[in-house]
Length: 142
Image (cartoon, rainbow, N blue to C red; front, side, top):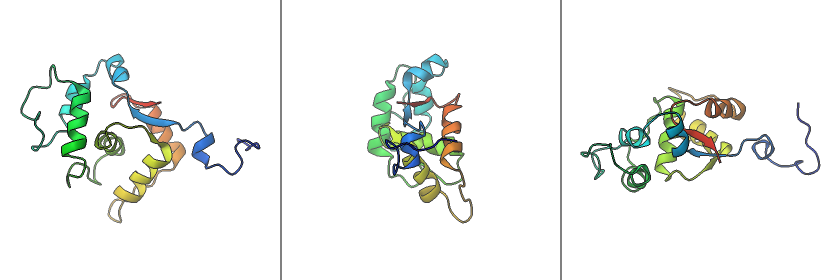
């Protein structure tokens, strides 16, 4: 059990629980022998200019910018019936892979994508463990 000292008293739990800010690490994907370009390319929808091109040789950062520009608000880009890690991955892509705090990710999952038919009930500590144990999407604490 962690006891809040004077420097952490009154701060949200995520600020002093080692939560950090998460993003998709392209270098971590490379270390895991996963193609970032292929992984991101598979999330493109028809409106994206790179959709018809082969993923090999495409710049993953350019693909992220395309998703942010063309798909961030697309109705079917993120669906509540997707697995939690997929929702987090697509949320980060839609935000241009800007790092998000654990609290921001938690709110996206539970308040935006959870619903009465499929409630998403996960606490921040469990969510942190899910993100840290990832071996597929390249989630990394910045």
